[in-house]
Image 1 (spheres, one colour):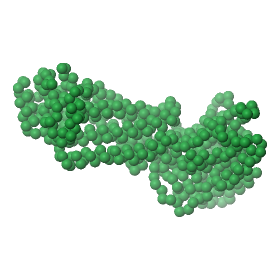
Image 2 (cartoon, chains in turn yellow, green):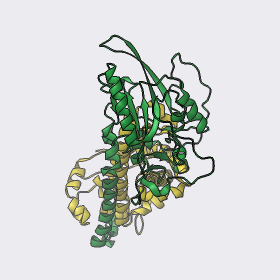
Image 3 (tube, chains in turn brown, yellow):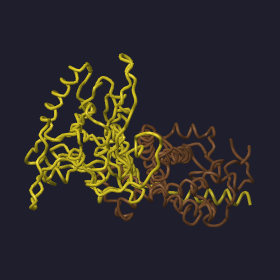
Image 4 (cartoon, one colour):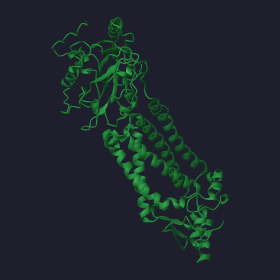
Amino acid sequence: MTAYDVERGDKVHAGHPVTIDRYTTAARINHWITATCLVLLALSGLSIFHPSLFFLTELFGGGQWTRAIHPWIGVVLFFSFSGLFIRFWRANLWRREDGTWLAQLRDVLAANDEKLPEVGKYNAGQKTVFWGMSFLIVTLIASGLVIWDQYFAAYTTIDQKRLAVLIHALAAIVIICVWIVHVYAAIWVRGTISAMTRGRVTGGWAWRHHRKWLRELVGGRQTHS
Amino acid sequence: MFPPLPNPPVQPMPAKFGEQDLVRRSASNVAPPARQLTQVAKLIDTSKCIGCKACQAACLEWNDLREEVGINHGVYDNPLDLTPASLTVMRFSEWINPETQNLEWLIRKDGCMHCEDPGCLKACPAPGAIVQYSNGIVDFDHDKCIGCGYCIKGCPFNIPRISKVDNRAYKCTLCSDRVAVGQGPACAKACPTQAIVFGTKEEMKQHAEGRIKDLKSRGYKNAGLYDPPGVGGTHVMYVLHHADKPEIYSNLPNDPKISPIVEVWKGVTKYAGMAAIGTFAAIGFLHHLISGPNRVSDEDEQNAERLTEDKT
């Protein structure tokens, strides 16, 4: 079995505690650019989605500025996320243990990690977030271009624009929910956030949540079935 | 002959309606107004229109708009479509009546229909950028417009146009500024054949009735009034010689209504979407409250250390 989920730059440092390099500096910068874009897009998008949130346009310099800037942030996000996709897609391929892990969602939520199958660099929840984000971002950029009237109004019919604006709104709601799951999981599972800030996690964190990945890293890529 | 509207007095006078008469305001709730204004309407009689475009000229003139000098496309339509400056255009279509084999030249003055249930207003996300007065006039407040183009998606008649210069939406105002001082719209004032008349909606319906009777007596058995119920009726109505086939008048919609997609987008999606986001956030909060953080234990760290030492 190939160690598909060990990414370039992943490295174990023996010590007390053991520390593991999980994300390279480039991956972290890439992530935080994407994250910033996603938050700005959610704020600007929500401000023109629901009247009670229209006041959020003030953050962007008013309604006209919000309308003008939102699609451009979307373009930055699309390319930034594409970078993340290229980095992470292999390690997010679906594996047999992912189904088992997902079937035991009750144990996941109860933090009974010892009852769960050993998983690689990403568990089924993270993989769902990854593929969900990927699919939704493609949907959002595609539907977003259709309703970017300033430059592309002439290329589609009004009926197509109506459909696009509904799809855009629905996809945006779902991606915000996915984002909530992503952020909550990072907060709830203590020791996770340092992976994206300093790039490192402790050995104990990897043992508890990504034991297969840890074994691959220390064991010269040997895996347990 | 419909009695022409009198000229207004020359001394300044207060506006007859304003903010206090709003029945709808985009992206906001308004308290029902204390008084109900008499509903107004513009009636466009296609059977009397001679296609002179005096209405187009009057519209540009009154609203102080200048259309860029265009080119002749070989047809009478000029400009070819509504623009941010041309709030009304005459649309010319040649139609061969299958019953008589006569060529009929159907001319329709296109522009905002001032729907009783305005799709533009429903779609607009900017508070107060689109308003509706209790007399039926639907107006755009350009200072509040953000230029998103949602009004275009909401409109069943394809009327609003976004300016490339200032990124704001424009359409016919039914000359709300003129109506506010007891005048009729500039187009109605300029029309030499009274194909365009303006008054209360009731008056206009009555006037239309007479016109339809006249047309029927001349053999136009399908003559009728275009006041589409799908949008709650309109405050710009047409007398059509062939009211059973509005689409022959340069694609005047047969049964216009706000697109169901727009209704879903601005209806259930808006509320269900906010509820979904709120629910996810609440579940996260409650989960943390109930089950507490998922911490790495010392045992986990020791296990990792043992594993690492064994292998190195």
